[in-house]
Amino acid sequence: MMRRLLVALMATAFTLAGCGGIGTGGFADFGATAGGAQDIGLARTKIAQGQVPAPEDFVAEGLYSEHDLPLQGPACNQVLCLRTATGIAPALDTGRQEVFVQVGFSSNVDPATFRRKPLDVALVIDRSGSMSGEPMEAVKEAARKLVEKLNEDDTFALVVFDDEVDTLVHQRSAGDRSELLSAIDKIKPQGSTCIECGLKEGFKELAKRPADAARARRLFLFTDAMPNVGATGEGEFMDLLRSHSQQGRDTTVFGVNIAFGQELVTKISAVRGSNYFFLSNAERTRTVFDEDFDFLVTPIAYDLRMALTPAEGFRVEAVYGVPGVDPGASLAEMDVATVFLSRRRGAIVARLSASGEVQPGQQLVSSNLSFQPLEGEAPPAVTLTARYEGSEPLSSTSTWYSQNSVRKAVALTNFILGARQACEHWNKGEKAAARELADRTATLLQAEAQALDDAPLRAEAELARKLAELMVP
Image (cartoon, rainbow, N blue to C red; front, side, top):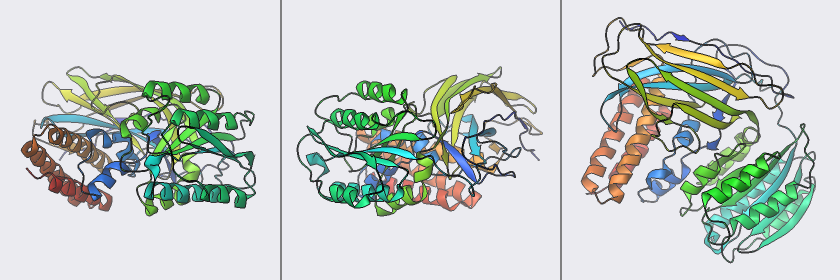
C-alpha cells in the first residue's frame, strides 16, 4: 500500500490588524485566494447560451477560486498559512504522467470577530451603447446591492462614462442611500467606451479621501471591457491601476455582457490589490454581494513570491492559478500580487515532469515562499519540500495523491487544460479533434467526481459535457 506523502512544512503568517480573536483547529473557518479572476463565469455563460468559449475564457485562478481546496496539515494559527500536497497523474493535454504540487492558502480569521475596514468607494459604471438592455439592468441591480452593503462609516462616489465621463455623486458619506439609488436608476446607455476616462475620474474622487491605514479605498468598475476610445491596450490600463494601487487605491472589476473582453481583464486584474468577478446572472450577483463582499475588499497579503527548485530528474513544466500568467507558462519563480480573505481555500498548482520512474522516498521539489504583510516587516521566507513516500516505484501509468484535495485540484487543472485546448482546436476548424478532447475532459471529470463523491466537481463534469455537445464535427 502506498502511504501518504509526508510534506515537510514550515508555515509562517502575520496578524491582520483589526480582525479580533484568532481561532485554532484543523481547517480554518475562513480561507484565502489569490487576486485576479475569481470565477470562469464568462465561459459558463457562453456555454449556457450555446456558444463555444474562447480558450482564454477558461482562467485557472478563476476556476480554483470557485472551489474550496483545503489541505491537511498543522493547525493554522495565523491569518495566512501555506501548505502543500502532491498528486502524480496523467496530464490531459499530453497524456504523460506528471507531478502536480498544490500550494494551498488558508486563514484562521475568526468569523465571530472579523469586520472589514470602513470603505471609501468610487463606483464607476460603463454606460456605453454596448451595455444596452440586460447588461445595463444587471449592472444597476449589482450597484444597488453594493450600496446596500455600505454603512455610515463608508463613503461613496458615482461616476458614469461612455466616450465622455460624468460624476453623478461626488465623494460623500454613504448614509444617504436614497440619493445614491436614485442616481443609479437614472443611468441610460449611450455612446462609445472610454474606460480610461471613467477610471481616471473615479480615482480622482477616491483621491479626495486621505490615506488612512484604518480604512480601505477601492474603485469598483462595472463594464463589458470592450474599450474603443482612449486607452485600449492592457499595458496602459495596468500602468494606470498600478500607479493608483501604489497610493493605496485598489480596483475590483465586475464584468457583464457575453461580449466581455476576458483577456484584457484577466491581465489588468492581476495588478496588486485587484480582483475580478463576472456577474453571469442574478444568483451570481447575489452571491458576490451578499456572501463575498466583505472578503473581496479585504487583502491579507501582498507580493507572495514562490521560487521552485525541482529535484534532480525533474523540471518545471507549467504553473496554473497565478494571476496574469497564461496557464502553461513554465516558471520557476512566481509572483502573486495579492492574497484576499475568502470563504474558500484557494490554490496554485505547479506541474513537473520526471525523466524516469519516481522512487520511494524521492524528493520531488522544494519551494521557497515569502510575502509582505499589510503592516510591518515581512516575515522570514518559508521553505516547503515534498517527497514521494510510496512503498514501490511509481510506474508511468500509475496515479497517486497525498490528499483528496490535491486530487480535486489536479482534476480542475485537467479541466482547464482540456477545455482550453479543445476550444483552440475548434477555433482552428479542427472540429473532430475538439470534440474528442472535450469528450475525454468530461469523462475524466465525471470519473474523478464519482471517485471523490464531490458535487461541485460533478457540476464541472456536466459543464464539460455541455461544452462537448456544442462541438459538433
